[in-house]
Image (cartoon, rainbow, N blue to C red):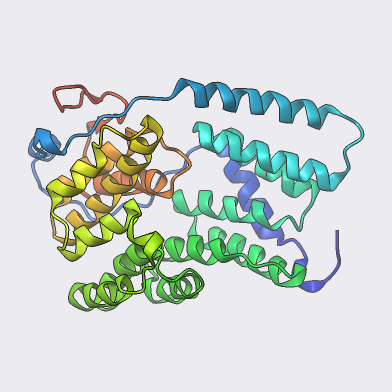
Length: 338
């Protein structure tokens, strides 16, 4: 381990992350309650035309299980050094994360850091996990560590600014979030998902009217390749140049593979949920977020933060009955569980 002052592993981050790995799922902080009738809130307000169902892809699950086996076998070899072991643990963590096995993924990322304390990519993932469970200060320190290490090692960590911006947004520090998001966006101009997040954060910092105008200006920066991306269709919907029916037609396109449909549905429902919240319709947002989570696209940030949004809304409205994301039925309803 290098003794350079900028890459000394922060003991606080390690301690917090290790405790996090051991304790399992953490609860988000409570928010203000509401007297909104729970039964009315839990009643599905969405029309059948806005329900797009997806199915799991067994081939991908089989592939991930095979990857776990192969990477584990490589770790068992005595010939790998600490750098190689750190990389293998990190790759295992990515696979577990994609499978939705967050606890196992966290352990693998921590193992990577124990093998190589200046392994910046693992800090990124730990920062995301800490933020998504409400441990914002620890998350910021993890992201700071990743950026400091990248600077020393001569790397660029664009995604760290993006991830930290989202963590700052959920940690109620929107001005700091915008600073990070603009750093990221200026290196990936025209990217629709950066546009969407600058808009979401901008609503908090500048108000919706200004945020929409800024989104419209950034939309003009898109190149020909980005013009045709599904993410740009979500941008166009928010700007009002694409009808909701047209957006759902793109989600239901019969020519899509199931993987493509899952990705589109996961992304669209999250941003539809955010837009519903901005419009003051928490009930509709609650259902959009559940539909996002139902895709089981665990490695998408939209899936991860839909769970955060659901948790926050459940606490805000003191919902005693939780809706499980895995029991969407063909009649567009959910079954609740106490």
